[in-house]
Length: 111
Image (tube, rainbow, N blue to C red; front, side):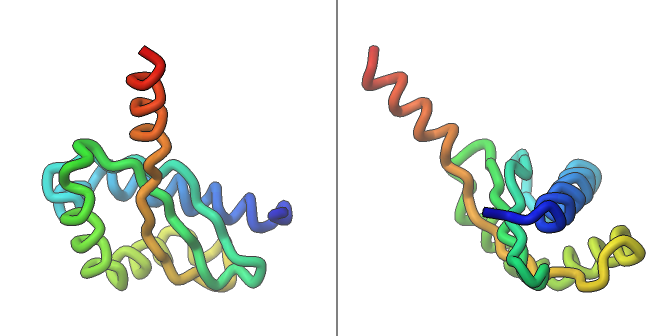
């Protein structure tokens, strides 16, 4: 169970990363559309697991590779935006949120 502080920091990171990907998405996504669905922060606020929804899903591996390459610059830009609000800028780990694909598969099976 996450604490209130973890939830607040997670929402702050989610909002800022969403805005960053919206404005500078081509540099990170390579033509795919990124949506930050959930950010889970560790209890000591030093790690953040960022779950992304990527459309089209065929570019998932390419986008994750690009985000891994640009991880330091993304963290630096995030630090410039939220540095006054948090003490530690967490290390970012990017994961795919495949819940939409799962929902679509279940719908197809039910039909």
